[in-house]
Length: 519
Image 1 (cartoon, rainbow, N blue to C red):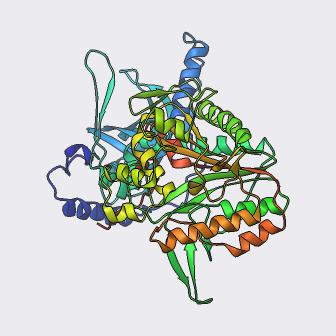
Image 2: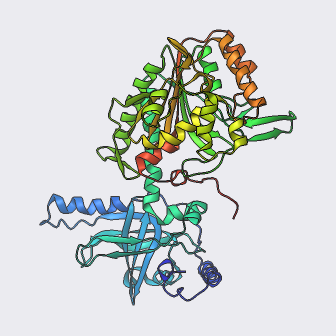
Image 3: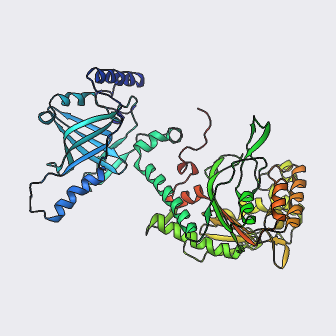
C-alpha cells in the first residue's frame, strides 16, 4: 500500500493493522463523547463556492479592506493532512473540488486534540473565515469542526505534485488497477474527480435527450422489463421464473413492441429511456445490461426519423459539451448535419469489396468463413445474418464520422416496412459512428399480415439453429390488427453515445456498476 494513500503514521502498517488502528481511534472518539457518524450537517457551502466568495471580494476592490470576515461552512472528505506543532493544514474535497483548512490550537482549545484522531478519507464539516495563506492559497481558518463519518478503510488517494517550472498540478492516481476500479466504483469515484465528471456528463446527455423529445411533443412512458415474450430485436434473452404465476419470464431485449402498442392506442409520439438486457458476451462496446433510448412517432417514415436524428445528436452534443470538440479514439468527430449516407449494398461494395446482389448464398457463406467462423456456425446463418457479419467485419470499423446506412435486406429487418420500389429491401437505417452502430431506425411495419409472415420466417430460422431470432408475438399481432398508423421508430444506445461524447474507450467507463465476473 503506497504511503500517499495513508494518514501519516500508517505507512508501515499492513492493511489489517491500518483498519485495526482506525477502529481504535473510533473507540477513543466515542470515549471522548464524539459521535463518529453524524445525522446531518445543514447547508454547507461548496469548496468552489467558498473559493469564489473570496475571489469575488478581491475583485470588487482589491485595495479596500472593509473589515468584514467571509464566513463559510464546508463539508467533505479529508484528502491530505499536515500537522505542524500547534497548527494543522488539511485539504477537504467535495463534489466541486478542494479547499485547504487551517486548524490552530489557540482557536480550538481541547477540540484540537481530536485532529490526531482524524484520518485521510474521514468526512468532516468545518466552519470559519475564508482567507489567503502566505503562499496565496485560499483556505478556511477553522473556528469549529464536526466529524461526520469515520473512514475505517483507507482510500487509494494517490499523489499530487506541482511542476517546478510550469506550476501545473500533476496527479498520480493511487488506483490504477482497472478491474478493481470497476468493482469498487465507490472508491473510484471518491478518489478520481475525472470519473465523477464522466458521470455528470452522462446525466447531462440524458437530460438533453429528454428535453429535445419533450419539446417536440413526445411523451415519456415506462413499459415492462419482465415480459412473457421477448422481442423487438434479434438477441438472446435472460430468463427468470415467476413463482406465484408459475411461469417463465424474460428480461426485455428491447422496448419496441410495447411502445408500438401505445402508438396503436393513439399516443402518437412516445419514448422510453431505460434498461435492456441481452444474454451476450462482454466487450469494450457490450455490457449485458445497458441503457436504450427508443422513440416512435406516428406519421413519420425513416427519412423523417433520419432528419430528426441529425437534429437530436447535434442538440445533445452542443448541450453536453458546449464548444468543446468531440474526440474519440484519436478522431475528432463532428455531429454537424447532414451526415453521410450509403445504402447497405453500396457500403458493402464500395468499402467492403463485396457485391451482395451478384453473390449466391454459398458465395456469401464462403466469405463469412474467411472471417474466422466455424463451418457449423456459418451453416446455421440465414442470408440476412451472413450479410450482417460481412458488414460488421468489412465496413463498420471504417466508418468514423456519423454515417447513415440505409435500405437493409428484408431478412435482416423483421419489423421494418418494405422499401418502396424494391420489396427485397426494407426502409431501415443504422447510424454508424466511430466504427460502431449507435442508432437503429425503421419505417415501422404496420401491415399485420406481412408482420405475421415475417414472424413465421423468423421461426423457421430459429428451428434451423439461429439463437437470435424474433419469436411470434400473438398479442402484438392482435394490437396491429386494430390498426397502427404510419410510424417511424428509433433506438439508440445511451452508453455508446456517452462513450463517444466523453471520449471513454470502454463501455465500463460510462456504466457506474458494469457486469463483472465474480472475484
